[in-house]
Amino acid sequence: MSRSRFAGRRALAGAAAAVMLAAAGLALAGAASAADVIPADPAVGGTLFLANGNDGTDYPSGATIGWNDPVIALPAPGDQTNRLVAPPGTESVVTFVGPQGRESDPTSWNATAPWELTPPGQWLADVTPYHLISPGTGNPSGTNATAAVGGDYSLGLAYLQDGGRHVVPGGLYFVHIHLTGNAVPDQATYTWQPVQATGPAADPSSSPTSGAATTNPTGLLSFVAALGSGPSAPLGTLTVGDGGTSGSASSWTVTVSTGPGPGPGSGAGAEARTLATGSGGSTAVDTAPAIPATSGAATITLTVVSG
Image (cartoon, rainbow, N blue to C red):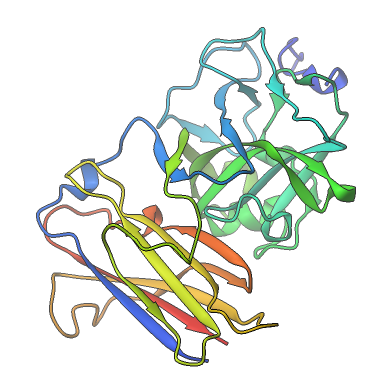
């Protein structure tokens, strides 16, 4: 197969706390908005938009794309002229796939690919998932392993500093994807959604306007749930971080299960799955993947476990 000018751009370029979130009456299956709201993290430069790497045509949000289909990143739909701008201080650039809510943490990424930095920023950047040739330290590790497992991830481009250890402020561009896994990686497929960084910033010391907050009695772990409102609002974000004990670096896991409605044991019979993991610091967890693919009343149980 001959390569088009779009496909060839690389040459140029211990204690637990549970939050019971009653989503009664929401049409959850149809509540997707034009863009997924994410926390206003200082690292986020904005969303990107996906286009066909062979001919440059836009992929509409929600389109099904093959894991090995050539994909390029645009700063706006149809914009094949402008670049994803690299902030001051940028030393290198990579494309990546990683868990939603931890995009600014390179240690969480599942797979990456290094690229030649082309100031003032990357043009028609190749974000084809199958081209992410470097296994990351996240779990699963590697593009093939990720494709086989499936799940909810972010796909994007990051400008890095400090020898590649940190994302430059404003240097993170990505979209949310839902990956349908396949044991044959190049037969896996995904759908995508742009993101909008207008959600509450990750700050465990702030008081949520709605939702719930609690603190581990040992002071090692705290979380704040900031919920959306209205029939089309996202479920919200969960900020997990150090509860105030000096030197604490407690590891944590957020699991999710769903049940038929409010009440004791509403999650009984539902298989719990891991939504996010981490340790210490302050991390915003996107709870959007917790929304069940059903409509009507439902209770979503998020459990934060330390240690």
